[in-house]
Image 1 (tube, one colour):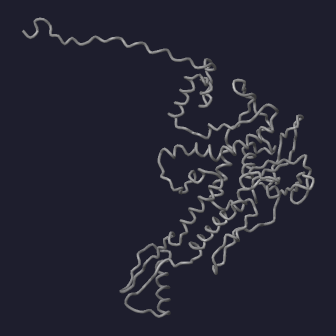
Image 2 (spheres, rainbow, N blue to C red):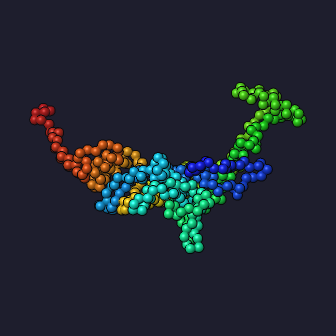
Image 3 (tube, rainbow, N blue to C red):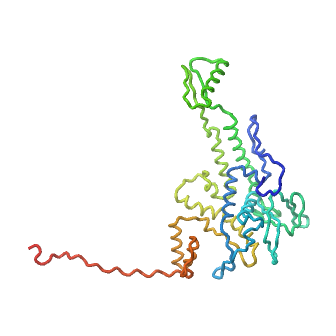
Length: 395
């Protein structure tokens, strides 16, 4: 059952095991369901990384810009946009996942504020929705094949293209690459699980064995080692050798690693590196430290801005929503306090604001700009040692 389904669906069988008579083909991989692509570890990890980070960031509501900006209380309905009790993080995760897999987010507007903006939206599974532009230029929408009233229909798309009402989904655009990822996994399952190669060889260097003798020797050897960790004693001329097939010889792991990294890059630069796939560069402390910033700037920020626009559309004007990106960049305590010191010295923040970031209670004197510490008093001069000998000394 999909993560959005609200009613039982016909059973879907996925990833059927291929016949051993021929190699598997990525052309036979079915990606018609949004969840099918999540069978790829790289796709699932990339989608979950972006959706989890975006949905778990704190949301703040403001009005005004610059010096006139003021923080507003978050409306109660925004804390649970679906009204089902699962909260904003659950709703945001569903929306981001729908965007990442299908390029579109769809919903049913349950309540509307007197000013006309939606305050409660229940999301649809993206595969239940069909949409097109009719001859008069108006969008037409269907849910499970039935036309619906557009006044209650909610749609937000990504990757738009001209003359199309729906956005392009990353999965459909890169179906070949994702299909190759799933096919590589199938091949690995068959190679290591279906007994396509023997585990070892039992040979006799002194005599040629007839088929009946070979079968008897094999049965006796298997009976001796099955369920036992005791050493096996072999007679004269017998030798047992494990068959260690290097996966690289079949290009399995090498192909899988490259394919999985390519699937991660579908969702933006930096994803493959964050998830540990080889990218051709050397791994140093400096680039490990900057990966969170790299991920935020080049891959994650566009999804956060899209989510912010959706949440802003559910607020009264001129209020707007902002996700706290500082929560993503978890710095060390030393680096964090260096930033605090710079902010306080330039009077960019108040002491209570810094204390709030550290989950400390406010202090009565911490609402205003931090006062510069008084200069340190000059050091008192110390008496220099008298190197001159006293009179009469040495006589």
